[in-house]
Length: 119
Image (cartoon, rainbow, N blue to C red; front, side):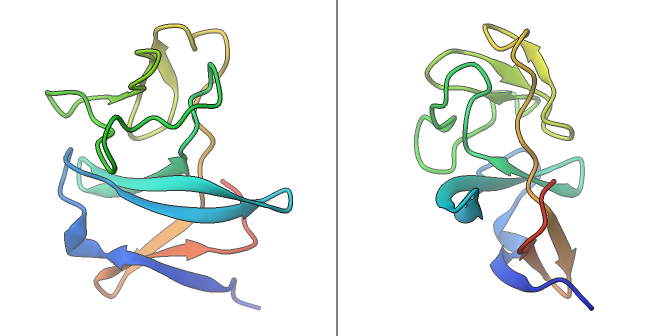
């Protein structure tokens, strides 16, 4: 049986290393914020929660990348994350792990959340 899917956004809303799209997912019975970004041509999605302290990453809605568009940065703590893996690259989160991935699919010009699936 195919996983249930929910539209996040049209594919063209996500430009490489630019503004991301915020959405919500259900985890452990709660609705929590998440986001999707495009990096090196592929879309990646994570819970919008710093691994150091559970604060949202974006300093302004949808702004997750550093000025060069190379890493995701926590606006509160300065923690740096790899856009393609969520791995912590530096800052206070180094011993805390990385971002929690969200399962998505990109097809037919749109990005979809795979509901009921993690990572």
